[in-house]
Amino acid sequence: MLKTRGSNVSRVEVEAALRALPEVDQSIVVGLPDRDDGQIVVAAVVPRPGSALTEESLKEVLRHSLSSFKVPRRIIFISPDEVEWTPSNKVKLSEMAKLIARRIAHEPAADDATSQPG
Image 1 (tube, rainbow, N blue to C red):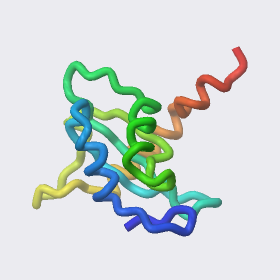
Image 2 (cartoon, rainbow, N blue to C red):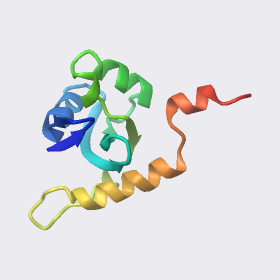
Image 3 (cartoon, one colour):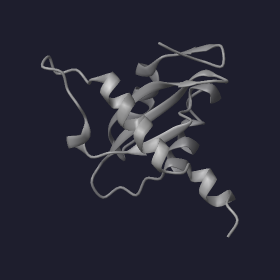
Image 4 (tube, rainbow, N blue to C red):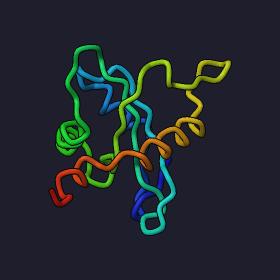
């Protein structure tokens, strides 16, 4: 369970909403520390081959099925081989959180790119 803006968010619920989309092969949702919100909901998505997903298009679809505070603040795209697994076939959430945090630190958010002066 993640806690953002004083509300509980189930990782499993957000992952299921992402995986329900035909263009998404796999999703991993984690919480990253945030000074203002406690945690922010973020996701790593493995897109299906041939799909043309964007961070903003996924957020837009999720806004129709999830409460606004459950929609990931950031979504990154990864390849299947970037998912780290434990010996018992579970996703290593702490390692995935580190990967997502590193990627977010190096990539501007989709809405940041459009708001930058040209």
